[in-house]
Each structure stands twice: as structure tokens, then as C-alpha cells.
Image 1 (cartoon, one colour):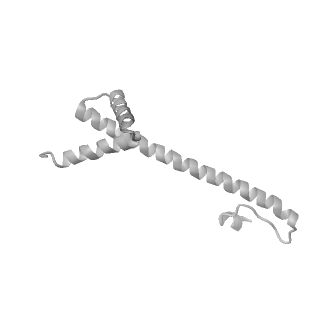
Image 2 (image 1 turned 90 degrees about the vertical axis):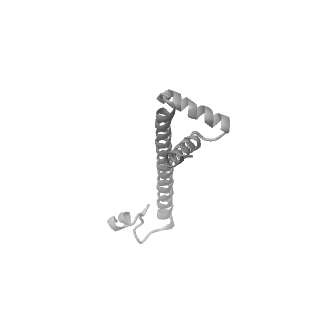
Image 3 (image 1 turned 90 degrees about the horizontal axis):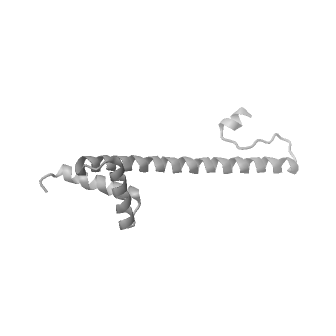
Length: 109
């Protein structure tokens, strides 16, 4: 049974078994699979939200340094630009980062 768990088995049926033994095992396996899938989706969503937050924080810092905006002002600036351009706040923040990085790389342009 330990080897089955280590191999990732979601249910375990000991031989010999009857069809009536399979139904509960299948139900348990299906439920466990759905739980695992839901947790994987939640992890993916949280990772995406964390990455978005990092991008927003970096852009707010750049706006603070280049435009003298406070953190709330920079957030509002990104939020307004997002609504005006019909882009996500992450897309606007990434554009701020990309454009200002380009300017920093080529200050004579």
C-alpha cells in the first residue's frame, strides 16, 4: 500500500475484489482527483496574482522615481491608464517597466 501511495495512487483495491468493491474506490479516486485539480488551479491563480503584484510594485517604484508620484498616486495612475486603454493593470505596469527600461538603456534618444 505504501508503494501505491508513493506512486501517486488515488485509491487502492486489494485482490480479489468484487464489482461492489470498485465503486467506492472509484468514487474516492474521483473525489481525490477533483480536490488535487482544484488545489493546482488555486496554486496557479495565487502564483499569477503574486507575479502581478510584483510587476505592479516595480512599476509603482519606477513611477515614484521618474515622476515623483507617491505609492497611492502611482497605483491610481496605473489604474486610470488601465481603464483608459482597456488593458489590465498588469499590462500597463509591464509597459511602464519596459518603456522606462528602454529609456534607461538609451538615454540619448
